[in-house]
Length: 343
Image (tube, rainbow, N blue to C red):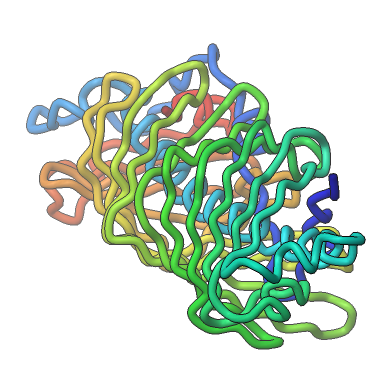
């Protein structure tokens, strides 16, 4: 059985994005209090969410960002896993007897060993036998991938479930694909996110002075996320998503990543009910280990706006009750306090 190629080395058309492990583990992984330093007290007109405590505001802040981060990085990572299988298809076809057997069918199916264990069963249809086995994605091809305990990214991420991917366009600078997820579960450490729904990804790549930057533009009308973060289970709906996920590489090593865009998150997490529109206008920067290093975002519902800023390993959360443009509450938390309230 052939092996699913290591993604950073074999996918010139798109980068691999970090997933949840580094973010959640560096942010405390659960158990610590998210109470920070309050610089103002709740007003008498405060809504239920903002009068609960700093924990409530922190849960809203961390969950809304992590929902976008988890979606963007999972979609991008699954794309890379499928694209990486093309190298395995090329090797598979080179094995004696396989090519002639594959030529008798309108589709090409094979099972690959994943880089650190588990398997990926891939079916490629569309195009010609030559394009299906040429080691790269081509417009008009359709990929069906079934992952079973498929460990990738040095074993840091395990994929289970199914994705169907239609290649809409592909050239040397980028690829556009339409993806459909069925119980696609990405597990990092003790945390997992399971995706159901459809998304479109368009990727581009630029190289300058030995450094490569890849950007995945991701759009989704509705995705369901079943999450298990910080030992808590929740079901979230991410809708009207328009995300930009950018990663800078030095060779095959990611140095920084950035998330920007807009989306809506709804669901109940950590006893907080969310129905928030999230805006990340200037981008949130992440370190190579996936922890947020700088940037800001807002989460707004009909009752309040939660604005969060990250800098120097601290998180500042400002709450505007009534969406009238004034700050009614402000807390400063450490990254572990803030991260422990996600989910």
